[in-house]
Image 1 (tube, rainbow over the protein chains, first blue to last red):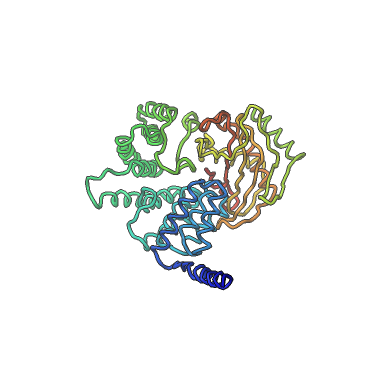
Image 2 (cartoon, chains in turn yellow, orange; image 1 turned 60 degrees about the vertical axis):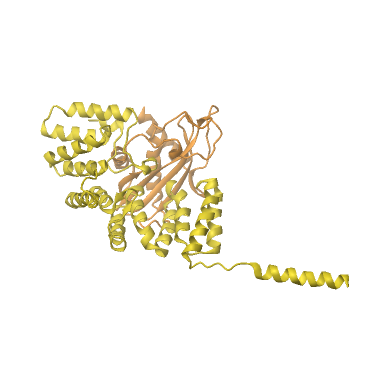
Amino acid sequence: MGRLTILFLSFLLLKVNGYSQSVADCKSKVFQDSLVQVYSEKAWKFGYNHPQWQASWDSLLAICPDIAMAYREKAIPYLKNGDYAKAFQLEDKAVELDPESWIAYRAFLHCIFTKNYERALVDFERAEKLVPKAYIMDHTYSFYKGLSCLGLEEYDKAEQALLLDIAQQHEKSANNDTHFNSFLYLGIVYYEMKEYVKAEKVLKDCLRLYEQLPEANYYLALTFKKTGNAMATQYLEKAKEYLQLGYKINEDNEFYANYPKQISLSDINNK
Amino acid sequence: MKFFTILFCLVSNILFAQNFVLPQGEYMDTTSVFHSDCAPPYAIYYYQVQAKYPVSSPALLTEARAFLKQNSNSIESSGYITFRFFIDCKGSMSRVQVLQTDENYKTTHFPKEYVNSLYLFVKTLDKWPTQLQIQNIKNINYIAFISFKIKNGQVDNIIP
């Protein structure tokens, strides 16, 4: 009798174990989001340079292999450490799975991290069609298109893109401040176009918002040099002083990569 | 001084140039050199200690182009050549990995002579931030990299 009871209980347990496993509903957005939340917390306990970062996201992908964000997260350490082959293989996968969410981000990486301005423009064009008038990393798509055209020395296109960027910032409220870096890059574009009056005006607008920005002081000094304005020396000195005090382009990703036309002390000392 | 550094690099490269393929990747130099005053070689990255090379990308680009004009043959390829290395607390570079991709970020190989020329240039960089601290660790060493974006055989940009 005792043996029969044990056998009966064993069958009961087997049944419970056999049928208790829930089925992953990888198509459900709610399920995907909850997975991302759980595995993101696991990954961030270690940070993205720890092997457990990759292991955490791989565990998620073992459950649902089509969650784009996991590929994007896996790419982070490779990107920040200069391994572009691995980084972009993963970024491409994220874009393939969910272009609406990730193509603008990849465009941003092309523009700021790898200075691949042609690819950045292609991706931003596609991003604009998929999600019009959106922002990525604090700026409009047009801002980065302006930077990319500046990098390619296509100044007319850069001017148009940066004017669009500024216009977009005022669409919701005319009273919005323009981002100082929009003014900075428009000023640099005008300087490169030899439009010195416009360059002076826009760079001064930039300095009204961020007086210590070394690049704005530096390019205003160069503009004044071209127009024979004696204030050139004063602004060059300001650029040097603020750089030495640690002021710089105020962008989150500046820690990892230099922004276009970003200066260092050697640029000032050589003038 | 810079002339002698370049001369030394040229001579030492002819004599000692290394190109090692290890399971972890391809290396120009597999030796690890850390001054005795430095902390152990933890995996600390340049961006954790604000240690980007303190010369702007355009200024470095000008220097690199001038260097290559004298020290390399022309090529026609495009893509990225990245050197990733340790900088010890005194500014010495060692354990230099090389990563190469085409313009679509697919792994490739550039002509070895050209890679060596860029490596020689990287070894002339002598302004790396030194004697840095993170949390309570003093005199840290850190991992940094320099990438060359090559467009039709010309150095088109320098990253970071």
